[in-house]
Image 1 (cartoon, rainbow, N blue to C red):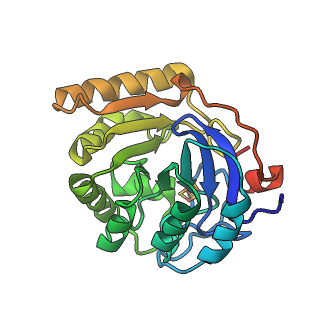
Image 2: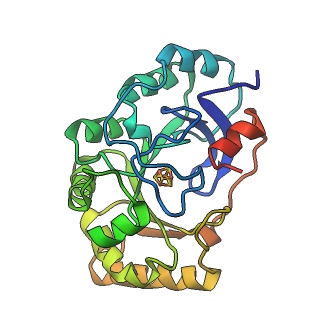
Length: 264
Ligand code: SF4
């Protein structure tokens, strides 16, 4: 079976090792309430920040039953924002019926202000949440969110989630020329949110934004680490994409599926 609609990969991830992808908002078009300037799955007017059912749990289960590839993580991500799936918990439960691996979710954190969404994120083993800007102006410039999404509420939601969680939390930041001079302010937010780790990325796959060089990323990582130490948050690990290695598993899903999700 090569025509998987909801499962993709497995792919090699510098953050997750071998990762079997699940797309809970699988559609031919992107379903996301951001339209980040560096988005690698294509640009579109951001979807309204309201949830809907996109994938039937039984249909996902039917794919998982024949998706026979080992992985380190089963990861909810793909062509859009996974928390826009109103049945996220049901889809996660369906995964649990078929797979024994740890679970992860890559989220843009747009809905983390909602208590229900925070509760649902709490059921994953590892949450990787996006934060690219230290204020509303740069948030709007980089992430180009749907109307109604508020930067302050997202940061508050991230902080509340971090305080109440029992799972692992990473904040991921895509660094480009737009935000590289703002890393001190970002470090102050990281310290306030208090995740387990910070994942510093830069757009290494083809997109409209230019990647920072290794030297620029090393400098950003150093400034952030030192500022975190100064703020008594030196226990937060800082990862730099240039220093990480990803495994190279053989994907079962077709190259076309991976391409649609910006994975190759
Ligand atoms: S949050 Fe992810 S999918 Fe959505 S626009 Fe940004 S990069 Fe693209």
